[in-house]
Amino acid sequence: MPDRLSILIAEDNAADRMLLSTIVSRQGHRVTTASNGLEAVALFELERPHLVLMDALMPVMDGFEAARRIKQKSGEALVPIIFLTSLTEGEALVSCLEAGGDDFLAKPYNRVILEAKIGAMDRLRRLHDTVLQQRDLIARHNEHLLREQHVAKAVFDKVAHSGCLAAPNIRYLQSPYALFNGDLLLAAYKPSGGMHVMLGDFTGHGLPAAIGAMPLAEVFYGMTAKGHALAEILREINAKLKRILPVGVFCCATMLNISSKRGLLEVWNGGLPDGYLLHADGRPRQPLVSRHLPLGILDPAAFSDRCEVYPLELGDRVFLLSDGVLEACDQQGELFGEQRLLELLDANRQPPALFEEIQRALVAFRGEQQDDVSMVQVGMPEDDGRPRPLAFADSGLSSAQDWSATFEFRAHSLRHFNPLPYLLQLLLDVQALRPRGGELYTVLAELYSNALEHGVMGLDSSLKRDASGFAEYYRERRLRLGALQDGYVRFHLQMLPEGAGGRLIIRVEDSGPGFDPDEVDAAGDEALCGRGLGLVRQLSDGFGLCADGRGVSVEFCWSAEA
Image (cartoon, rainbow, N blue to C red):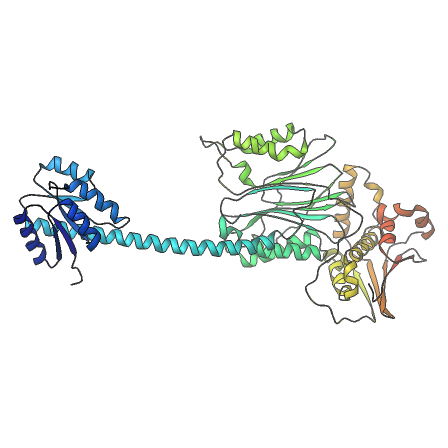
């Protein structure tokens, strides 16, 4: 029978024991009997019955002690015990429950009530078994999910943290609310020196919040390594997130471009709390305000990549944070808030201790973490004067080394297109040039910047004499570039094989009025944009000025041994 149970009857009275055995057997169940509590415990270990009918008062060991031992031996399994007692109803109930019983049956026995109680206890036992099975199933699924998440987390960390977060100019703190952190912190060196830094906060927590982080990190690292500008990276990230993320999922982010050579900080903030530029000379902090919608919301045509530009000096610090810091709350539900943070920033006298001061304040506030918490502090990156090499995944065994090409980028292209990553990828198809990829990019960037800003647009670098002039220079640059209707920057590239090596000749020309080559030579390193020629001379193997003052020529050479 599918509902046939194994039932242990412990009763010291032989007549009652026989009566109960007959009633239970006629109901279709298998019966085992014991005449005292000690015998009942022994039979329970041997038979493992589904249910026990236990007389309360028996010789050798009473039913209460036997019930306690049976419950202990049954472990997690539910073996219902129905006490058989002639005690008054109140006393019976209390005694039975305290001993571990699940129900009781008063003497004399009623067949109908006994059958109903056995059925009820069996349903309870089956329900308990189902709960245990579901618990174990959930535990196995959870263990499987955790293993998968830990594997995914390891892959995620390798992708998301493959940059330069260990750089000495970066300090950061990340405290995830779940295994996966919805906050994302990325940093990568640019080919020409300096770095890009990004703090992002995806909606939600855990794996759903981190699901967009890997494609975002791939775009960030890949485009930074190829020399793309901050605005181009932002546009590509926004377009990709808009395409792949479901509605309602987006990424609040602040992205920085830090250039140690130019002493420049570019900032784009879309949806994160205000960051702050903290000046080393004690000037008032500069808030880095959110002026854009988060990434992944707007269509590419509506997205704005406009950045704010500030001068950055040695000792200055950029402080960024996610909203998890401001939303930490005390036991009364009061938020830590922006004002407390600003007071800490104002009182900070030892810059290296800022994180510790904020952490102590959060602990003193008795903050309860409600979100992923991230803070990052970035200073001017150390610059050893040498650009960093670029990494490539392909073998590069086959590449043309005897060719020439000319590219002329006119007004429309200059307004909307950055040619440097395109040209760099073309040149670095030559495997021998790859170890000098960073130097090559820096030279191209310097020459293009001078040709565009001073040749085509006629900007005067002397504007950048102070912070206000610095901002004015880049405001004017943006306006002139947006209104540009004519002019060009021309790149002449010539690749020549020479014995077992080769030579690359780059000539950059522009449509501007030109400069006096003799004055440039006399001005030395301060000529053209206040910084360019000295660095170009240092990084290239050959250098020359065009006679009409409208172009510069450089060379890179290599040999088979190199």
